[in-house]
Length: 506
Image 1 (cartoon, rainbow, N blue to C red):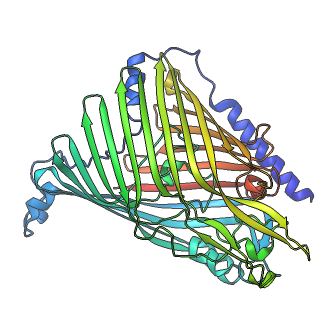
Image 2: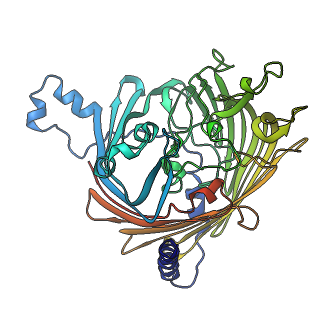
Image 3: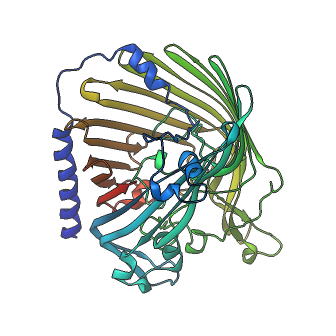
C-alpha cells in the first residue's frame, strides 16, 4: 500500500512543481481587438484547403524523366510523418483479464512503446476539384516485450496494432459559392476545444482517455457535404450514410471500468451490428453568421450517437433466462445554437443544445415475485449548456475556461446508473498554454473535472512539445487521474503515467 501512495504523491508533486513555474511571465497586456477577430476566423473552419504550391517551377530531373512526371509534380503533393512514443505507468495495478474470469492482467511500468506512421496524398484536379487520401497505423512493441499471453484478445485487437484510413474525399465547386464534398470527412462543430455539446458528428478514438486533445481524436465519417457561402452568411448540409462509432477501451484493458454493482457479463455486452435506421442516413445542417467582433451558428441534426448504447430485453413469461443485454445504435435529434463574442483580449463563447431521445440506463428495478431486480434502458430528452471564456495575454499566453451542464428532462426516478448519464452532470475544463524559447517550445496545462465539487474525478495533464529542427519535434508530459467513485474518471485512478515521443514530418 505504501508504494502506490508514494508513487501517487510523487506524480502529483512533480505536476504541481512544474505548473508553479511554467506560466509565470510579464504583466498582462491587452491584445488588439482585430487580432481576436483574426483568431475567430478559425472557429468552425473545416474547409481544409489543399495546398500544392511549390517553391520550384520545375520538377527534379529524375521525376521529369517519368511519364507524366511534370504533371505529377504540379498536381500531386505527398506528406506525412513517422514517429515513436512511449508511456510509463508509475502506479502498478492489475485488472480482470478480458477473456478468462479469475485471471488478471498486470499494468504498470512501460505501458506503450509504439512506432506510428501517417501518410497524406493531395491531388489537384481540373476545375478546382481536389482529392485527399490519408492512411495511418501503428505497432506497439510493449505487448511483445511483456508477453501477449497475459492480455485478452480484445485488448490486443485495439492496442497492439492498427491500420486505418483517415480522411478520404473528393471536393470541389458545383456552383458559384457552393462546394460539394463526398467521402470520409471530419466536421468540427461548436466552439469548445475540450468538452462536447454540439460537436456530435464524428466519433472519437478514446482508447487512451485524456492523453491528447479532441482535435486529434476525431474519426472521419462517410458523408455528402454541401457548403454554401454568401457574404457573412454560410450554410452546410450533411447526409451521413455511415454508422461509425467511438473506439472505446475493451474489457481487460486498464481503461475499462469494473463496476462492482453491475454483473460482469453485462459490463461488455455483445454488439448488435444491425440498426433500426438502416437505409435511412443521418442528416445534419448548420447556418453561420459572422460579423466583426461576434458570430452566431444554428444547428440541427438527426444522427446516431457516436457511441453504441446498451439496451436490455426481457420476456417475463420465460423468466430471468430471457434477460439479454446488447450494445446497439441509437439515433437522436439535436437543435442547437452557439456563438462567440470578442472584446479586447477576451473571447466569450457559448453552446446551447436540446437533445431528444438520448439513451440512458436505469438502476436495477424490482419485478413482481420472486422479486428479481433487472436493469433497464430508456430514452430521455436532455439540455446541454456550455459557457466559456478565453484570455489572450502577452507572449502568446492563452487561458481558456469552459463549463458544461447537462440536464435530463422528464421523470428521472431510477436514472442513477453508474454506467451512463446521471440525472444531472457538471463538467469543467481549464487550459493554459504558452510558447517559450522563440516559440520553439509550446507548453500546455489542462485540467478537466467532473461534478460540481469535482467529486466525480478529474484529469490533470501537463505537456510540452519542442521543435528540434525543421522536420523534427519531440514531446513529453505527465497525465494524472484524480479519483472519485469507481465509475467514470474514478475508475482510472491508478492509470497515471509519464509519456514522451518524437516525430519526423516530411
